[in-house]
Image: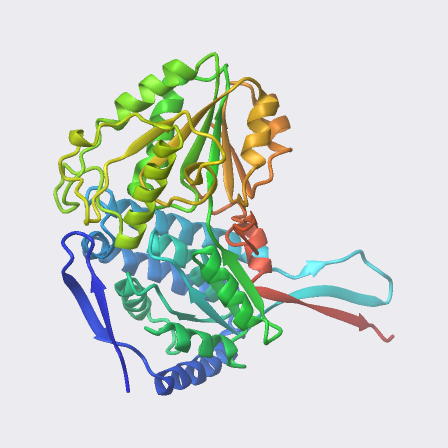
Length: 463
C-alpha cells in the first residue's frame, strides 16, 4: 500500500504539495526500464549525448519562473534569489557538457611496437542520485548531468522537502526528447531508498545530506561492491588576515554566512580575524547584518527567509542560547527583526563574539543564520583553529598576498581552498570533502572518473 508524501512549506506551515509515494512495484519497473535504456545509451557517442543535454538545458530555461516560485514555497528561499539557482544549474550543466568529450576520451599510453594499448572509460550502469533540499537543483545536477553524459542511466530520489525538483528535471528531460528510461524519479521512504541501493541493478549511489545520513547510506551500500559518493556536512571557516581589503571581506563573508538563511554545506559558519583588524571587521559585519529584511520569502523586498525545517530552527536557537550561556556575546538585537518568532521557522541572523571551540556553535554544524567570530594573533593560530574541526569541505582566506594564501592553504585540511571568495562551486574544479564532510568527487574532469570505470585494451598486432 502506497504512502502519501506531504510537503510542509516553511513559509506558513501549510501543505504545499502532496502525492503518492512510489512502491516496490514502481521501483522494479524503473530499474528494469533504466537497465534496458542504459544498454542502448552507452553505445551512443558522447557528441550525441551532449546534444540531448543541451536540449535539456534549453527546456530547463523555459520553466525558470515556475521552478523559482516552487523553490520558494518548498524551502523558503526569498523569491528574489530563487532564479539564481536556475542560472547556477544551467552553468554547471553547461560546464559538464564542455568537459565531457575530453574527460571521457580513451586514455592513451606510451606506444609499444607491435601493440595497441589504451584505457577506455566505461559507464557504470544505473546511477542512483539522492540529493539534499537546501540547493535542490544545484546538488542534483552535479551528478545527474555528468552521469548521463558518461553513458549511465539515472534514477533520482529527491528529498521529501523538495520532491517537485525531481519532477521538473523529468519534465525538462522529456521536452529534450531523452530516450525513455534513461532518467526517472522515485518518491521513496527511507526503507525503500535502502531497497534501491541493495538492488543489483544499481551500480553507483550519489548521496548529499547529513553525516548521519551518509553513514546510513554507506552501511546499506557496504553489502554490495558498488561505489558511493558522499557529500555531507560542513563547518566551513574563513580567515581574515591583517592585509585584507576589509570592506570587500565584510560584504562577502556576511553573504557567505547568511545567504539561503545559512543553509549551505559550504556556507561560512566560523570566522577567525587577525587582531589588528578585528574591531573594525566586527563593527562592519554587524552593521551589514542588520540590513537584512526577514519576512515572507514571496515578498520581493525580503532578503532573509525562514529556515526550511522547524528542527533546524530549534538547533540554531540552541547553539546560540548555549553559547551565550557559556560567555559569548550576541551582537544582533532580535527586536530589529520583528518577523523572528519562537515556535516558527523565522530566525533573526545572529553574530556571536567572545566564542571558542568549546561551544557547539564553533564546532558542530549549525546550518542556519548564525556565525561566530574569533580574534587571532597569527597565521599559525588561525591555521590551528581552522583545522580543529571534524569537517573539511571548504575554507577561505581573505588577503592581498596570494603566495601566503597558497602556503597556508597547503596546510588546511579541506576539499576546496578559496582566496577572497567563498560559498561557490566551479564546475571546472573538483568538489570534494575530507573527514566527516564525505568522500568521492563530483564536477570537473576528475568527477567523471567516479561515474565511469577503467577498462584496459591490450591488443597485440599480428603481422
